[in-house]
Image 1 (spheres, one colour):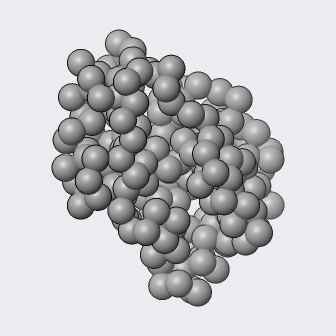
Image 2 (cartoon, helix red, strand yellow; image 1 turned 135 degrees about the horizontal axis):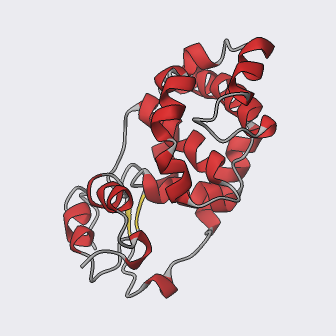
Length: 192
C-alpha cells in the first residue's frame, strides 16, 4: 500500500516510490526541490511534477551558479516559456534564491551542511497512521522558513518549507501502512 496522497497517477506514484522522503544531500538536487516546492504554491504538486523537465531545461538543470546570473532578458524569456509556471514573482524568486543559496554554500561549505543542522543530521521518523495525521507545518518548518527568509530567500513560507523537508527526507512522513515508510526509515540511523 502507498500513501493515499499519491493516488493513481503513474508520475505521482513513481515520485512517491523512488524520491519522496529519501534523505537528499546533493546541493543541486536540494536547490531543485526548493525551487519546485516554491513553484507549487497555489497549485497541485502533480502540476509541478509534469513541468519538472521544463524547469530543468529553463533553469540550467538547477545549477544555482548559472541561475544566479540570469538577467532581466532571461526573466522575460522564462515568462514566455509554457514548460514552467509563468509567474513573474516565482521566476524572480528562483533567481534571488539561487544567489542566497550560493551565499549559504560559501559560508557553510554546502547548502546540505547548513540545512541538515535543523534535524541534527538525521531524518525525523514520524509515525503517521493516516494522511489525516499529517501536518502542514511544524515549529521546525517555522524555524527553517524564518532562517531562509533572513538569508534573502522568497517563496519559503512554513508550509512550503515543511513540504520541502518531507520531499528531501528531513522528515519521514510516509504513513505507517505505506511500504515506503520502513524502507525510508532504514536509510536513517535515527530510531523509529
